[in-house]
Image (cartoon, rainbow, N blue to C red):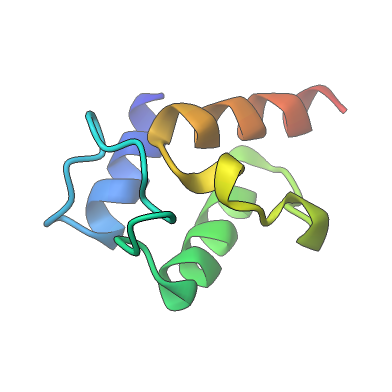
Length: 75
């Protein structure tokens, strides 16, 4: 989770990723943020986030993103 938080803070230092639970729903992260984030997560965690994973539920919070990463690492 620490590595994910570092990636998120580098991407958007103005966002409280510890407590925010509607990053996509509230428009805090836009499509450009998600594209950059997917690339970073793929590289950092040696996973492949596919288009079918690009749903708001997977990116609305840091906790949801970590769950996605862990799920993809187990595949």
